[in-house]
Image: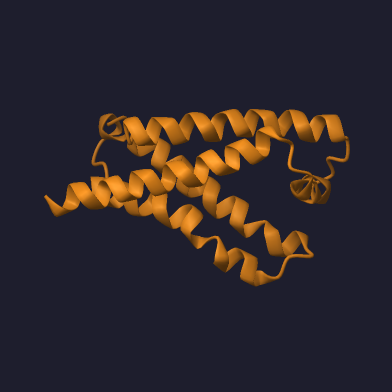
Length: 127
């Protein structure tokens, strides 16, 4: 079925995007420190600790969606993708185009969520 092929392409795309960002977070990517500093977090150890948690979460979600694309996880990934893309230009010095460049970071999880069907009950969010 064509839908199954599309679903697998999206699952692999979302997996790759969140795996890559998760690994960067676990490595404590210093280029991301400016986003913490913009909200008043200036302690490097705190930034690295937060990035460790984010990295573990991103990698866990990447694996989950590859194996079992749970709708609730896809909703979170969509929100997280929008948020992390959106914070770039207000914080600076990134231009607004950095936000547009990252639309796939939330577009792919949203597309997979919609391809799987919008849940009609709380129970369906866990499927």
